Length: 105
Image (spheres, rainbow, N blue to C red):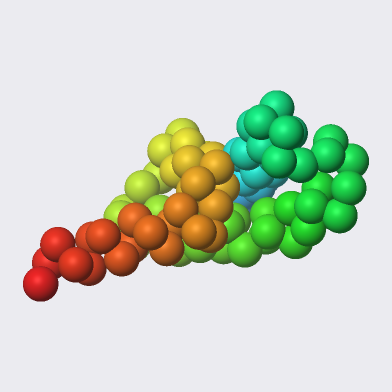
């Protein structure tokens, strides 16, 4: 019985580590995107846009986790995909999805 408990504990610990690193990757992706726009002069470093990015992070996090689950990704691939989806953001993800759907017709 103890071996099963240890296995479950290890599995839960691994899942929590992946989720935490994926959330950090989502935050990093949106932060890099925000800094890119600041460097281009399209945004201020501190402003309402920076605050709105905080609300975008959970959205892209959930989308990326769903996509990773659908693709069957595990381990380090999950945070990598999360950072990519967070960087391109909702608008970039919609453009990629529309291009994919158009290409399938």
